[in-house]
Image 1 (cartoon, each protein chain N blue to C red):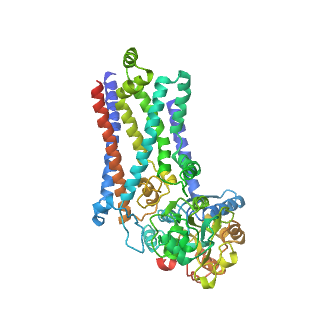
Image 2: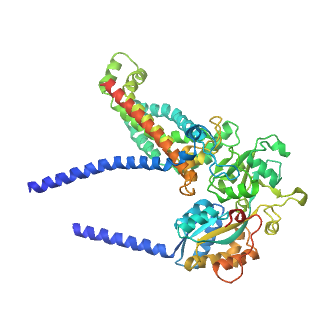
Image 3: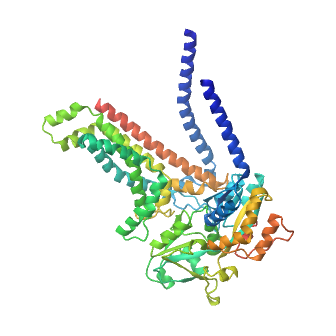
Length: 312
Length: 296
């Protein structure tokens, strides 16, 4: 009797082991940016329904978490709303990981306030002052006498970094409340008359109770809304950024298949239906070189990419 | 045959000894790990500033990074002491009701329900903090946002209640029946008997219960991460957003580059947390022994 039980247990363990090994071989693990999670999940679902047997898991945790997972070989693709930092590239190289970048969507980082707040436009400079804590009341910006409540992301977020490095060019006020994700910021600002938050444009498309700020880099050149696809694609909306995926080395197998699908017409239509914007021609050229599809040179980044600073 | 069973005896003896030692080894291992990983932090951060300044900004790039956990220490104590202030009176009251007043029928229903409360995952409680407790607080106090220390305290009180109730009830039950009988025979009312005889007699158990509740509150992560607003500035009161030690570790350890000052500093705040919970547990142990002697 004992022997039988022993046998059953052993074979169960063996089967389980085999199962895990098999799962590992054809399963694509994607991890990282909270801004990208919904759209990549949608892409993965559509891809899986068209490719029976393929398995893709998409989890969040923030861009920093995703890139850390890629470096430690705990995921196949890292979603990131910021560029990889030179320190991270170094770390990756020492671990034998060679990070390659693909741009999957364009985001107009949206600044949101409560719908009852009369202010509907801000300059990049004013946004910086607000988040650095230099301006503490809406009346200083021509609004009502209401204290400003800052909502932001936690430091593992790529959006947190992008905001700090590119928009604010300074450190966050210690009074900022750090939220878990984009959706939580939208919820908080909805309830807070003096609240302001920053989220990916995919999270404001259908949201009620908030105002999406029109933003100007220079007020004489006019204010633009991230909800207008033309203004984001043309780069007139000043805080536009590419949303990236990083992978280890040249993509192959299921990872490559999935990337090709994401960048196809169908994939980019899903990106737009989720509220983000399809990538322009120059990024397609860039991606093709990463995917090894043509020999074209890497495209130059837009001036708002964090890559320049990080030297990636 | 005798020899065989002797061997078996020895084997089992060894096994239990090993199990007992394992706990000690794991504890010592955690302590050594924390100390060795946090020691390099103090080469670059002065200890005084680390503990008492509230300037935590390790990812600063425009100014040099600063490490000061003062506001986190205050936040952690505020949230957990607030939780105790809510949970202790409620918990002792409930336990006294269950052990002395409730009919067996009520007790049969109430006890399992309280135990179920203990099994609710912390992330669910945190969610309630965001969608239920937060809006209620912001309405009552006319605040713009209900994510603050008070919210965290209320949620942690809910989480500590089952521990406090069941341990206090056990302590009250272990008070000899003769105490109660004597008190009633002397003409004391039911209320007087509970407050002046039973609760003092069970004080050691009750203090231990509260300390365990506090231990849970200090170490709880997910709930406070979700419900307290996570703002690193020094809190101005229970209605400001706070960021506790556990929240900071949970947020930052996932993506910190290994073997940097930031990495070591996170271990250092973990060490501080470890020492705090160690002290709390030791106090409860000392109190427990002291009162046990008195009762005997």
